[in-house]
Length: 174
Image (cartoon, rainbow, N blue to C red; front, side):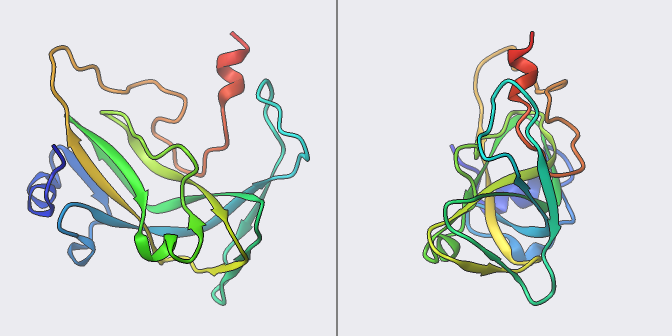
């Protein structure tokens, strides 16, 4: 089951932490998260799964930043979230998708116990000007069932304070 907006609000401060929380961003069954000003792009022409790839950092200026097609941009939410006893997920907002902007390529699924900012994997179909502070995606919550639910504790993306490039190389170097 997906939590209603009313249930999300009831859980804020307990099983759900959204910092900052702005009640006007609450929807019937989700909450809108906003885009932070920081962006990151990979500079290597060929990305290698077995090593850290070079990155370049940028900031979205007040006049906006134009994303180019066929390029992956990593960004993050302005809000830090923490979730217990529920499964958090993010999806792009329909108004953003109708402009041809994907806000996550594959990583919209969170783990029970995740704490941190959400890294967005943004990909544009055509050039699009983006702005920091825009409500870019929505977070929603699934109830989880079963016994012995183990929360995400020591994962490579836990407790992050920044955009997270891929750390797949850490798994492959074991």
